[in-house]
Image 1: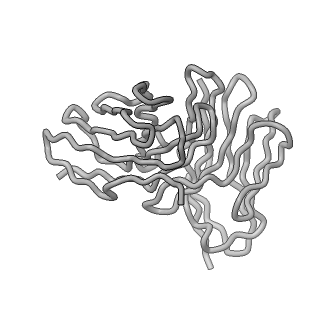
Image 2 (image 1 turned 90 degrees about the vertical axis):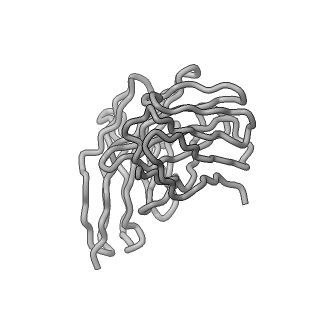
Length: 115
Length: 112
């Protein structure tokens, strides 16, 4: 069974500074990987996804993520954070079994942006 | 605009009561999902449906029931057997199984 670990529960970053959120996954084959963002009391919005191909993936809102198979990681980055990036971020991994498709989420990382 | 709607935004349940959460999508997606979110935890899968009139249990199906009579709709009933129902419930859909999931705005269920 697949699983996801987000080692940082909470990160505080200054506006304009860079941000990196860590994600480590456990899955036996090449995974499908996702990053979602959730504002308080809202649903999840897809930031980006990796299925195959280029290991550096560009997403919305200026985010990017890099898939590193050797490290089983899919870290999310943004070069310059805006106050509106304050939210909770979830990494997810999907199994590829047709009969048992499942999306497993990490526990999330809360990002606080200080002025 | 295509999207996923969930209603109500807030729902209050009394002891011993069954309540139903609505999820509707107009994206023409085949697959739909229900997740439960608790503070400090990720999302946990309750039920999912890959096609009309068919659904499967997820990781935490006990105390919940679903139906899928129409492609657009996937209502979730929280039964009195669910002893700890207070949570944020999220509905999602995808074009088909194994495709990217898109989420609704959620329903917060509280127990009176």
